[in-house]
Length: 282
Image (cartoon, rainbow, N blue to C red):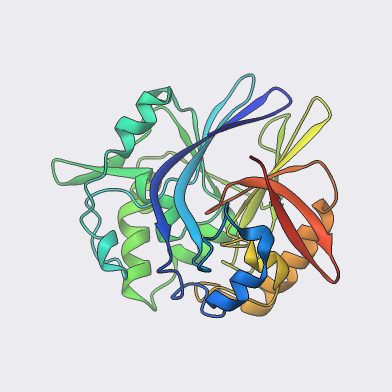
């Protein structure tokens, strides 16, 4: 799937798609509640009220940069909490190359945050060592986010993610740490959107009078636009994540801004009473 914002082109490359099996991440999103939000169907949910989600990367091409935003789960990883995320053998890199984005053609890796399903392809296993998957790229991480997970020791699965998908990039000297409001290019500025993680960032694109928002995991699914208090079980601070959702969606509601989620497709945010709804692009 491809979209354009002025001179910027965005291409979605999918690693994994799911229907249902999402209650572990959004426990309040029951089937009856989802069915009552008719605007979710069929793009974001089934008639039975099951959520449609994906793990994907967004390729962002500006006039002078080739950027991959978030890098999914990756192959050969160990110690993940979700069993099917361990020891994956997925043809993602072949899919990426077939879409016109060979790994050595990427000059920037930009992670909205450093969770397991957003950093996995930062590295690949070569002769028993984790090495950068994108050899010619600078890896841009939020400074707040990086320093938090660098020093984190509480949960073994999160420690494993940093050890195999983030630390090897730092060891290779390829990390660029930036503030959460950093301007990356003439077209791309980061927006601080904490809550899901300590230093979570969303990506604001402006080009030729058009705007786009890559929201990352501010919301895992558009149903959270209608229910701002439906925080994810993976949120670092659920109160803050709800506050961030209201602030971010208010900023871009009822505008022509193209919005693409970290786990859902493109659309536009509209106000609906005291909350919002998401109108999918066909």
